[in-house]
Length: 224
Ligand SMILES: Nc1nc2c(ncn2[C@@H]2O[C@H](COP(=O)(O)OP(=O)(O)OP(=O)(O)O)[C@@H](O)[C@H]2O)c(=O)[nH]1
Ligand SMILES: [Mg+2]
Image (cartoon, rainbow, N blue to C red; front, side):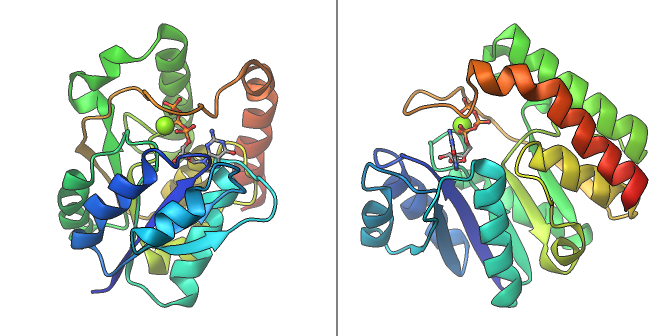
């Protein structure tokens, strides 16, 4: 079984090196997707031995992970493990996630199976609950943390669920996978809140949430 780690990274020069170092022993290759950073993230990642896939323009997390998935598909890997570059995902938990993937197609690392969710602000928790509820109701599954970016995919499934939109990529692909009958499991992962760099969440993003979310869900439910 060949495994690649996909690490989306935008201005994470302070943390990406230790993420690459921590992840490399557990996988065959670490591919950092640099989302047009301006702080030298790609050269730090390269210095730590990662393959670096560079975006010319910033796309956001959804676009960055799609580039990584395409790389995994083209290179014919069996599994992808997705790890954030900001230090929120502990690479020591990668083996647990990979082990859980041997008899399923997608493994989601959940903060709801331990106390780490309690660190997150109320609005963020309410958002996670809401998105997770939508995916469970429309996908007939029982996950707790659909927005988690600490995940494993079987690449044969990934080919069939590549998300089309950059916003709400996790909702889109998880709902799509659930509706196609793929096996989804969760594993408990500790995920402290971010303490470096800049979050993908800002006021503009939050304001557009309901509209973008409805767009993504309707597309999956009606057209796939
Ligand atoms: N903020 C941000 N992150 C990006 C972007 N493109 C790729 N990423 C990477 O995608 C990963 C997830 O983004 P985060 O901003 O950490 O999202 P999050 O973990 O849901 O939010 P926080 O809890 O605030 O960190 C990180 O490794 C980022 O470096 C982008 O355009 N903006
Ligand atoms: Mg983060």
